[in-house]
Every structure is written in C-alpha cells, then in structure tokens.
Amino acid sequence: MLGMPAAWLNAGEKLNVAGAAPEAVRELGRMSGEMERLSVQVAPKVVQIATQRLKVAGSGEEQPAGVLVAEHGCGSGFFISSDGFLFTNAHVVANATRIKVMVQPVNGSAQPGAMIEYPATLVGVDGENDLALLKIEVEGVPFFDLGGGAAPRQGQLVLAYGSPMGLSQSATMGLVSAVDRQLSSEDPRTYIQTDASMNPGNSGGPLVDLEGKLLGINTMILSQSGGSEGIGFAVPFDVMQRAYPGLRKNGTVVRPLLGIQPRSLTADLIAGLRLKVHQGVLLEDVALHGAGAAAGLLPGDVLLSLNAEPIHNLRDLYRTESALGPGTPVELAVMRGENLRLLRITPEAPREFAPVLSPGSVSEKENLVFRLGLYGATLTPALASSLGGLREPRGILVLALAGSGLVGQNAIEPGDVVHEMNGSVVDGVESLRMALEAVPDGAPIVLQIERGGIRSYLTPGGMAASEHLPRKAGSVERTGGARPPEGSLRY
Image (cartoon, rainbow, N blue to C red):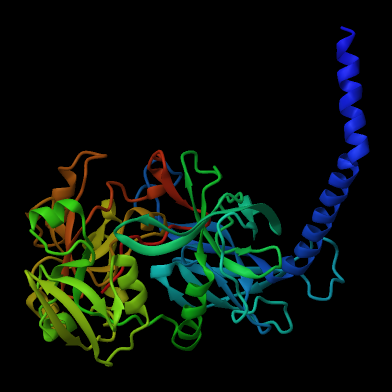
C-alpha cells in the first residue's frame, strides 16, 4: 500500500519534468486547428445530390411486384470548375429522372447549414470507372483543380467528405490502407483503400489529403453489415483526370476496342495449357470481325506487350489499352506455343448501340423479364441482320434494364444478346421466362451473352431487385444510389 502512492508520484514527477502532457495537448490543438481550416477550405467544394428514379417493385413492397415505382436516393459530389461542373459516381445518378444538387452559399450570407438547391444536368457517364459528370447553372463556386491532385501513399492521413445517411457536409478521417487495390484478379481497375468511415450517401464525395488536395472519389465499402467497417474504396484522381475531357466534350469516355477476351494467367492455366510463359494475359477468345482478328491474333495466344509496354496482367493491359487511340496502329507481342510473334493491331472505336425498336413498342407483357430485371426482344432474322456480325443469330437482344436496384447483381448491358441460360439455348423472351421459372430462388443462374462479337458468361443473381437480397458476408456495397455494373469491361 505504501509503495503505490510513491509510484504514482514518481510517474507524475517524470511527466511534469519532461513537459510531455502540455506539449501533447498543444500538438493536438494544432492538429485540430489544421483540420478545422482544412474543412473550411474543402466543404464549400462538396455538394449533396438527391435523385428520383424509377424502379421495378419487388415482392414484399407496398406496390405489386413488377410495377414501376418512384425511388429517391442520396449521394455526394464535388465541383471541378468554377462554372458548375461537378463529379459524382455513376451509380448515384443511374436511371435518375430528376437530379438536384444542394450547394453551400458562396457568399456565406445564409444561415449556418443552409443550402441552395439547383437542378442538375447529366453531362456524361463513364460506367466502367463509375464516374458521372454533372452541370448546374452557377458561377464562382470553389472547386478542386484537376491539374493539381496528389498521389496517395500508404499510411497517409486522409479525410473523406460527403453526405452519409443524408447528413450533408460530413467529414471523417482515416489512413490510406492501400494504394492500387484490385478487388479481384479479373478486374483490372484499381482503387485507393482507406479506413476513413464511409456509409451510404458518401458515394461521389472527395477523398483529400491534409493539404486539401484531391486524391480520389469515394465509391464503395466492403461490409458485412451494410455500414462502415473500416474498408472503403475511392476511384483514384488520375482516373478522373483522364476521363474528364471526354465526358465534358462527348458525354462518354472513348476506350478503343481490341476485339479480344483477356484472362489472367493462373498456375492451373499455365500447367494445363502447357504455356511457356508465366506472365502475360491469355486470350480466351478473339472477335471474328474485330481488330484482334484482323491483326492475326488467335485464341490461346498470350499477350506479352502492347505499344512497347510490358503486359504482365490485366491491370497492365487496361492501363495501356486506355491510352490508345482508335485507328492508330500499335505493335504487340504474343507467345503462340513456343514462338514469339510480333504483330500490328489497329484499335477500333467502340460501337454504339442503336435502338432498333421504338420505346413506344416496348411493353412489360412482351418484353419484361422480371427476374433478370431487363427488357428484351426476341431476335428475328431482320433484327439480327440489323445488329450485324452476331456469332449466333438467335436469342434475346437486351433493350434496357428495368430498374436501378438491379444493377449491382446484374452485369447485363443494353445491346447484349443472351444466347443460353444454364447451358440451354434461349430462343426468345418467352423461352427465357419459362426457363427461369424452373430455377428455384437462390439457385445459380448463368447466362451466355454476346457483346461486341465476344461471348462470355454472366452470373446475374436470382432476383429482380438486389436490395431484397440478403447481404452476404464481405459483400461490396456501393455507398449511395444504385450499384454500377460489374465485370463489364470491354477489350
């Protein structure tokens, strides 16, 4: 008992002599002041976005299943020009019929917390990178300079801004957990991973460093509960920087097509196919009338370099291919068996899907496939001929997605042609409906689709509205609005 007060006294004497406690408080105070100044600088550049969209009601909702109903969503965004151009996520405004942007008053004359509401125009969408460019009629707003972003560093302190759960002008702090994070080896897109808290509504907000420089755009979280668990992801600044000119000028990002279906190399593929290389990208398929076929590429080739850039994996291919221009020939190297071949390929411009049916001719009775959440048309000889270059002139042409809630579970896109379901041939809308009726809820559904002359398999899930699916452990949750398509990259 006598020794305890002495120990406390000794510890206190050492603390006072060193002056550690007051200095620590002063350091925290300085840090707090810097954070306050940073928020004063950043907050006016951040906006709240409210949307109204139509979706197909699912079972258990107030409206009968299959009925189109209005749905409201909330997300975030930030200005990238003084005249009202702003970035958000594509999934925040997906299928929106109305977009409103809430902005902090520029002159500060309004009451604290007051926001000014503006209608917004959707200027462009880069669905592959989950980016959308909006425009509101305003002048003189503070903005992030896309010429002055920063590169993230692991362990760096960062702040995430946005409207989690609709709470506008919120800020959270955390670390950069990882840079260049891939969500899967077959998805070449990379993200900034952070433990700064993100929740539904944070999507589209900026991730910034302690100098207020833009690092990325908050996009999604990895969650077991649907809320923040310390694993958030942001699309990096350089992706936005590359996408902005095309979105502002053309409303889209033109990524040239190589006419190939690439796949990451695995130990099993290398051993089973007796490949002579351990790095590169395997070509699963080559479009019959695409750029790859014209260059002499064959299924089974392993792509080693493109435009003098080494290709070790899908991430390298995505980055290199994104910088190419349609119509400009480039060199590539492939390994075919034991032989190295040097070829020349001319990337093609993406083909735009031109609707062959008028919107007025599409109906729920004739075209809606509710369980997959799409409107489709049975291929006729005339319809197949108008599309041109189909590998198989039978199946269903996907005309449109039926609702926003479906997109995250459904990688189908308008313009796709569905040829098979679970290994069985699909001849039309009615045959697909009948085949789906035979599949129990929760059972796997595998579609063989054709997109741009390339066939591939999709697993869209088993219900029409993803918000009615039970959340899975470790699932990726988008942090605002509907979810964007996954696995839809084209080469």
